[in-house]
Length: 99
Image 1 (cartoon, rainbow, N blue to C red):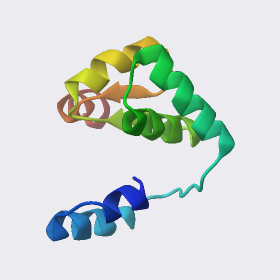
Image 2 (image 1 turned 90 degrees about the vertical axis):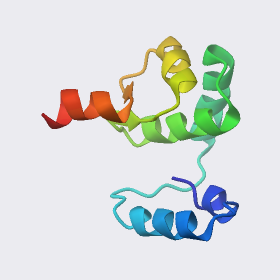
Image 3 (image 1 turned 180 degrees about the horizontal axis):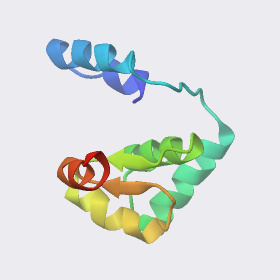
Image 4 (image 1 turned 120 degrees about the vertical axis):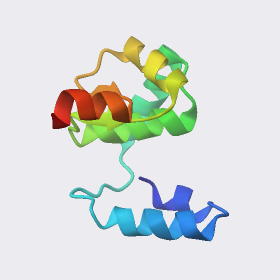
């Protein structure tokens, strides 16, 4: 979750919800050169948008096991990256991980 991205959100209720959800985060990271380099690689390798690439690079950097998204294009393209992160939609996450 990126604070600068949330600041740009025009919907006050969504913005407040994201701020509230961010209190649940266990790890916070600042700008890192490695994340920037990885995100550029992910953009080229999987044809990801810059936002999607930075989100996945951040998750990979902190060692996330799961990355949850409803974006079908991201789900499909991210398979090209061969990462240790399990990138899946929320329904599959509940089926496979939460059980």
